Length: 49
Image 1 (cartoon, rainbow, N blue to C red):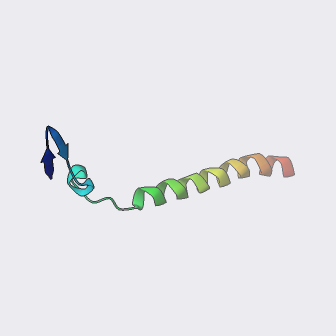
Image 2 (cartoon, rainbow, N blue to C red):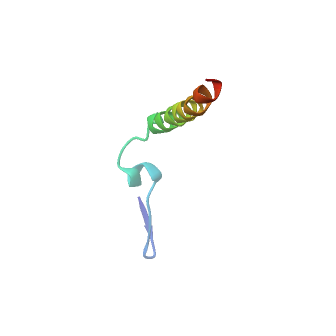
């Protein structure tokens, strides 16, 4: 942390206060793909019958 003339400069890791793993990105990506597959199945299956 560095302070210059009333400005406070904090490093990214210090400001976050914790680790930032990429698991949330994976969860969002996988759930997006699953939602697209489910919506496609709901639309395609009745069209085939």
